[in-house]
Length: 159
Length: 274
Image 1 (cartoon, rainbow over the protein chains, first blue to last red):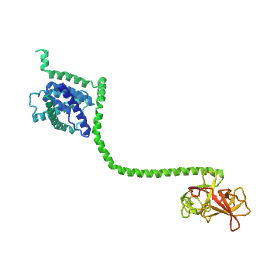
Image 2 (image 1 turned 60 degrees about the horizontal axis):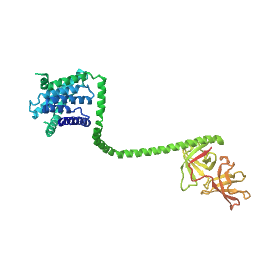
Image 3 (image 1 turned 120 degrees about the vertical axis):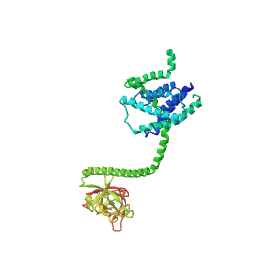
Image 4 (image 1 turned 90 degrees about the horizontal axis):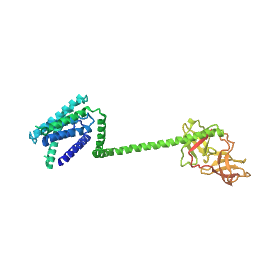
């Protein structure tokens, strides 16, 4: 039960963080994908099944809150949760280089599948160079967020 | 291996495939009306959370904006004061225009009623405090075809006219009015409804003196003094004032003290009779 409420609280916090970030830095096109970072954290630190389920839930939430193609975030986040879930208990997730590499790969993978799906539905956005900076943003914010998640979940005794 | 064991062993994979099918269904059912309405409802439901967040974030921004506005407040205040002054002047002008318009309108009506050749409304623009009862300046001159000796009257209800004086000198855009209270002014006058003639002479005060009234003429206090027909430039029967007292002068005539029928201290809009 503690795990369930902690997950709900974390997701709500991340949605709020997303809204606040958008509100404050409305002029920038760059925005870290907070829920993607959380799914990666769950995949690396908590468990494979949890990553798939939370990927599905967080994706649904993103799809509801974004007026884009419905289901695209659900599919992509769930896939990331599933793929990176295989790394659970197979690598040392506490290593910085593992975390950074995972963040980078997840971000690139997310963008790649996301744009493929959108273009397959003829909804692809016009290409801009800021897309190359998104993984960088994800790495910086993701690394900090991972540290916070690890500290918080350890504090609660979930990991 | 039983199905249960297989599902337990490959739980993430099974879940993934089930959820994938569901998400692909979502992707393909974008056009579905029910999905769209459900999504709209959810967005509406979640949008309420944006309001307090926006308020919290906007608060320091609003405070900062208020401080920025404060720096412009003084300049804005000066501008507004300036505009207010302008508006006040416009208001006064507007009122004057309306007042003039009403006077012109009444004058046109009166002209026909009294059979004057022409009535020209004029405005007093200057009155010297040293020569308060001697003369005043009006804002019309040759540009209004005014000429010397034309009578100037004042009216309050356009039924009665009261003699104020005559045009003394005329300039291009101004004229000087010789008031009947000026000691240099002498206007032939008579007692209304009586055949008693005399000359109204100014005394430099609020009172007028009617000279050359014969001793045998019966003049009573309260009699009305009007212009006589002796002077061709001034129409007869224009009211001047009322008799205040009657004395005997050293010249062997009656000296009739006359008070003007109007407030000679308050002359603003006058009319020149042509």
